[in-house]
Image (tube, rainbow, N blue to C red):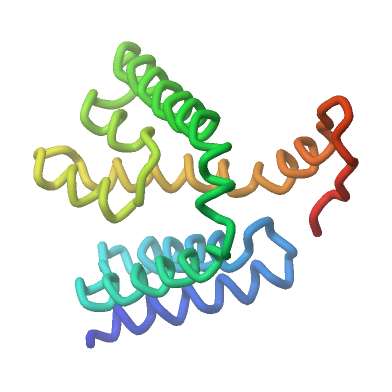
Length: 176
């Protein structure tokens, strides 16, 4: 393991710790993201996670998400499938529309804007950009900015959405 990779991992951990102290929204993710990005900028390098380490991290995240699935999930999913499809399609359309606007005004190229703005994992979009001959660093940068804005907006959006109430439905307390 190279010293640059160790610095990257340590910077991600330090960023998460600082994010917690600063009470950043979604501090484990945003802090680690900012810390590791700062390390790459300071080192003036493009250190990437080795496939095995990245794979292991993705397995852990997938396992954490899977562990949140409880009995009754499929029944709830049946009632939510149509709204979920509408939301996902709306996000994809918003991302593609933003990419078209960015490309139309020559802010960045079509491949970079599309891969940077559509929902998906940063690693997957950067890998796709490499396969398509697009600027991977630019895709990663746009995707990271989109991800940070999304993560930082989530607590506010959840609080706002928790105030919604259907007629006749019991009131719910806001999370957290």
